[in-house]
Length: 527
Image (cartoon, rainbow, N blue to C red):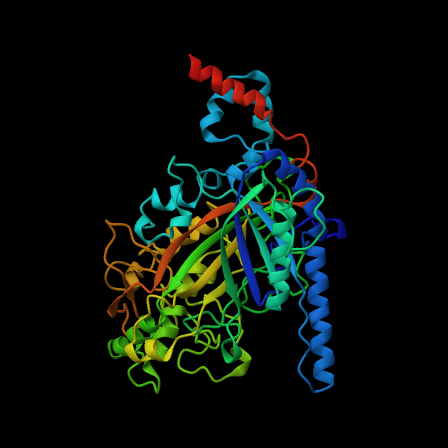
C-alpha cells in the first residue's frame, strides 16, 4: 500500500518517519482512574504528533538547512516538539482493549465473550508477558542489574501501563511540553492551562512513576553514541514509503508491514483495530565507556589485523562494531577511515560470505543485519534510540573506570510489527548466538563466529564470551575473549496505536466488556 495522506495522518510519527529530537523524555505511567484516564486520553489525541506532522517537520529542517547553506551561515534551530503515546498490555487492559492471560480461560468459556476475543484480541505473546517476564524468565537478563522501576510490583504485577514520548530540539521547549502533558492528565477538571499553578486532582487519572531523559551528545560528538560510533546509519527503507531507493549493494527496501501492523510483510494476522500501529521496545542500556576504550588499547596487540595500524585500538573497535567510528564500513575500507564518501555508506554486502578478512562474521553490524549472509531480511526493526548521561570526566579518563555517579548509555527504542521476530529474534537468536551467521564454522576456529561484542548476552550454559577474528589464514584461527561493556538495566514492551484506534477502540465503550469479565472472575473465585 502506498503512503496516502490518510495513512500519514493515522500513524504516530516516531514509528515513521521518526520524530526530530535533540532532547527526549520518556514519561512512564500507571493508570489509576480508568474512566477519567480514558476521557482525558480522548482529548489528548490532538496533541499527538503524527507521521504527517513529522514529515512536515522534516521539510522544515530541510528548507532551513538549504537557506543556511545558501547564506553561508548556520541553520536556525527550531524546537519542533513531538508527542507520542504507547501502552503495555496492562495499559490496554485498563482501556478495555486487552484480556490478560489470567482471564483468557474464563473468557473462552463464555460464548459471547469468546467470539469477541477471537476477533479482537491483539496477538503477541511477548508483548503480553512484558520484557521482565520474557528476558529475565528466559535467563538473558540478570534481575540484580535491572533498575527497580522495571521490576514487577510486590504482588507480581506489571509496574508500567504506558509511556509518553516528548521530544524537542530545544530543552526548555521539551520541559514546557512535559508540564503540559502532566497537567492534562493530573489537573482538576476545568483548571486553566498553567503548568505552574494548576491543582492536582484528588483522584488523578494516572501516576507518572518515573522518567528517563536522553539527549544528543554535544559538539563533535553529535550523532554518535557513547562508545564514539556514528549511530542510526543503516535504517531499513520501507518499500513505497521512503522516497530514497536502495542502490548497488545496499539492502533491499523492507516491506512496510515488517514495521507497521496490517501492511504487506506483516504475518501476524492482527485484528483490524491494530492496523497502522507498531510494537515499541524500550531498552535501558548502560555503557562502560572507559572500560571499553581500555580493552581496545590493551587487546589490540592480540588482533593480527591491528598490530601494524597507527591506531590499533581504534581498528580493533572498528572490527568488533563493523564500522569505524566515523561510520565507514570496514567491509568497504578495512584498513583506513579517511574517505568521506564512505562515512554513511551502506553499499556493501559482506561478500564473499565464506570469508571474514574484512569484517568479522560476528561484528555487531553483521550480526544485526547479515546482508548477503541471508537471502532476505526477515528480521527488521526501526531504531529510534537516544544517548543519555554526561560526557566522560577527566577523572574517569585518568582512572580508565566509569564513576558510580556518572552513568551514561543509550535509551534504545525500536519499532516492529512482531516483537518475537524483531527485537527478541535479533537479540537472542542472532546477537547472542555463537553459531550465527549460519554455516560459518568451517571458516573460523573455535565455537563458531562468536558473540556480538556490543550487545550479545550469554546464558549460563553458553561458552565464555569470545569472537573469531580474521588473521590471514583460511580457516581463521584467531579468537579473542571478550568482556561486557553494556549492562542491561531493564525496559518493557509497548504497543503504539494508530490515531483511529485511539479515537475509537481505546477511548470508546471498549472492545471487551470488562465488567462481564470481572463477574466471571468473581464467580470463579466463589466456586
